[in-house]
Image 1 (tube, rainbow, N blue to C red):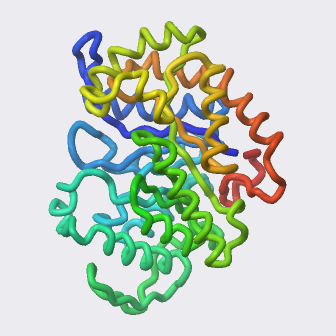
Image 2: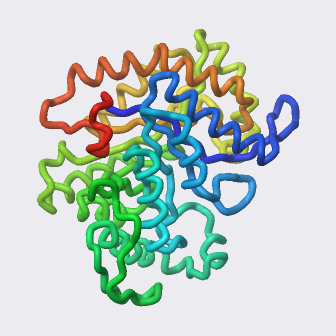
Length: 357
């Protein structure tokens, strides 16, 4: 079981001070958070990809390469790589290069993003988003596995005997997750290729995402990759933790109430009841996270958002310490104790297998 942090890289004013970090401060904060995650004993750091304010991570491979140079064990991932508006040839090249620089500690999550305007910015049509995702990934999948690719599709120039360089490390491509919040077609795509499915389940009731995971598991087995229980599933989560629950609620409430993604919607109490958000004590975070298995089955990767809504860096680093010291060790033990032997561990490149997952 792999545990980690993922960041959307938002630049949000702190509601207590009214001050927003500069882009430089936010970028440096994200890299500090990643290094802290490894120091705290977590397994993964993932960054989103955005090309619009108020977000800063427009170049995930640049950021992850910087982090790779300052870490030794941490798996470096994206929490979205825009398969619709990035050229699959450039994705193949960039992430293979990053894979070599990080000695295999790289995977990525394919997605369509949630910013409609990004499509015309990169010369694409929003109405063809799903078709783009299917065709572009089909090409990317081949580029990492075939040295001479002939290609003719609808959305990019043809290829004639093209070889993407560098080739994947030791001939093993980065592991791919397909992230979705609503599309059964994405679950089917992940299942067809035998890839992972990441239910980015932050803002909707558990039962909505449980249906997508069940579909993915069923179709993964249908395509001959193994039993449904052996499919690779990742989940999102959000936490704000203090030793006492009432202190966590009191401290986080102004951030929740004024955050762009929360403000004006359900109350903090309603949101924590219906979604993975935990605002409370370490014991409450453990208890709630363990219930995810009831809805989704045994899974391989759990990522937490801890740095959103304008929270100051000092507070975010404290959250990572609490996760690393009090929450994740218990979750590892509890999940391992009841995990069927046939359920595989989280994905790792063979070059990293000397590191315990």
